[in-house]
Length: 596
Image (cartoon, rainbow, N blue to C red; front, side, top):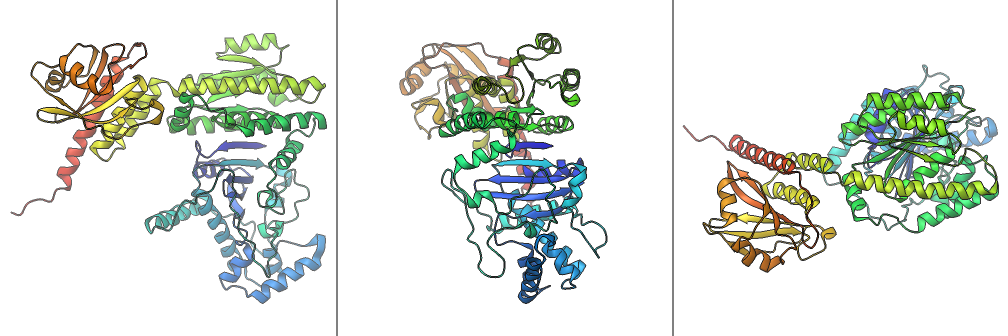
């Protein structure tokens, strides 16, 4: 079983809580620019960990806790070495030889896990992969406890709470500083000379013999040992595409190397989408290679993606996304005749269930060229599109060419779909309202209105209301490319006269959109920023106690005017006014009462 995703959409706290609530067992690999950490779960509980820092190992932790001496550690390491293939994990060796008591061993393991969790909780960007293990081999990941009372299962929720508390304290004390790395650079820790070897062995993880596992924990982090991306890529393809020929795997390796050389995120709308995270892809497939390939092309296009082969994960990710005001695009892979869990009947049932449970979700169905009836049924079930793709498995040399063509088309489709959804005004309204209610000052409120206006109009500008004039503040698309964002305050002034449209809007406090030939706007505003090709403009007041304190201006610049949903503008204006009232109310509550 496998489950992969991106920390930008699903933070590691949510991932760990998801694994705990669903009682998953397996290895959670979390990777960012600094390297990789691993957390091992049994039935949703922590049982082991592998820290990014090569110096943080169970033996050193026990020495630092003063529950064993360096000499005892050397003795246990020697005993492991002499045991050869039958050696047991270091912590078990210490217990069985009576060199550490059970309680202290448990304390050391708990600290190792906590330190690893604290590390990964600080990562805002990166990826995670959960390799879920079959029940027949899951027990290999449990400490063979010997004298210990049953399995070691460390409370997941308590570790999370402790880790979050530690992070809060470090943040408060200024000890938590995000490290900067050059693009593609991986941070490395120098190995500590002496008693614990530089290589990070399986015993350092506290795990027993795992020869029978389908997916093994590497004895040394490959990211610290091998920086050749081409070699790492081919190693990965050997795992996920083992049934393919050497020639096919090489063709795929060259394709993915070509992808990595340049980013395809060139559409400005996509750049905005990535920031807003309005859309992600949830890919359901039994094919390990296609899960890997779809994840690769989506990430290259700047689209957040999850991939899984367990249908129970679908609801979990959809509901997590909905909780974050996001909605993933569900992509269902083509059925497989040799797998009843991925048969046409099963995929069709799953598709109908998800559309019934989440009517708003978009569904894309993949199908092979000969599955005409299945494709038609997919449309009947509400699929947005049915994309043809090459059949599963290895085949003729042409299959690799066809598969690469499909991946290119799928990447293009995913990028356009995400851009369109990221450009949705409904999403922008949601985002704007969240930003407004998260604001802590009047400038932040004005900035939220400016950003929302810029999503509709080519040019936008904040105008501060004074007694007899307006003062130009920041603008977007004014005297600078729109994609550069807000410009510094422009500070030019527009006088207010009784006969001007500007004065009327300030007096009435209503949102205005329409054509104008107002002299003050033409002679003072357009003189400074240039006249738009159409005189259709927006004036959106930000009010405090019913009185406008700023106007957000918008026009279409050199572009042609488009239809405006006036109701959205009124909603944003009313929400901003409520936020301003809340500011005033809070100030009154914070103001100390006078002496009696």
